[in-house]
Image 1 (cartoon, rainbow, N blue to C red):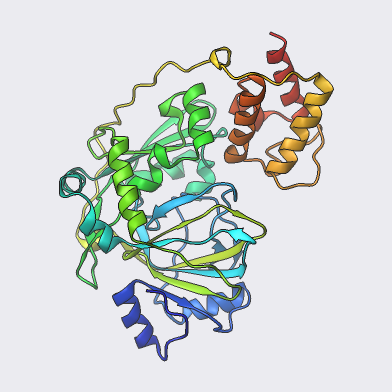
Image 2 (image 1 turned 90 degrees about the vertical axis):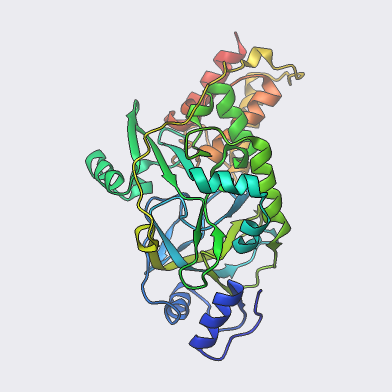
Length: 405
């Protein structure tokens, strides 16, 4: 339930939160990050930092971050914050500083209802095996491991992961792969109800942006995806199972339009949340609090002994692509590409001497451009070339080279 007015006391708020899982506050005097932190601070016992990250978030001040820095073109699937990690917030707050012109809602979903309505056979298998999370970091795929774990060196990351039941594998080009298994459900320690508490939907490959998954599957295969979810045994989760889980979430989704000044308070163990794509400026801040661990709810974690059963199919090549390609000269193509980069990064103009990653380009923006180039010209530009080239002119040189073959 969403409550459109402030409640009379902290006790009322906590009682309503335990009952409904979500409270939406209007007109409570929140106008910036500082007043948001002060408001949220009245309803918590302990602030929580953000480590073992799943999304890029900019630090604003104090305990306040941006809700996500993921490109506005992409949606974020419903999930309970940090359920794939070893430590999660019991409470999470969102504050709308600026509402977008369209889209950008924060869907929420009662995971008690999700647990209840998932097919019993599917639910039983997840409860028996748990969920295995497979993630890649670095070199254009996923986030940089330093940002994810908030560590500066490999030794510190290895130590953190070993103490949190995460298997690490260091790959070439300073890339990191991690594998961890977590339960799929648990009993809410206060409410006493069993909830669907995992990232199987959000981190399964089918929830990746379509352009990202197609590009990486075409160029590198499943083992190169930024993330994927499997059964805890390492067995693939069939797409129809994930679709069933998605359908159940959608059935119980609540939507509302943000208004500047709104504050959304969630019990993170009762309510999943996500984000819709949007247009216009959307500024939503987040703060997390009252951390809890698996050990504190009576569950001991172990480093996974199995690995995902991945078979990378032979990637297709651009020459097998059957669309009619646009014929343009080099100058026309260069102008088109620079305009496409500017549009994707929401900039007025870009120059060939700019570095794509230095001006804000990330892997999501990159694969959107790669897909456009592939569909329009039949050139399969690699994500590494786009992300690692010192200038956009160097990227254009590579595309021209492929077009001339």
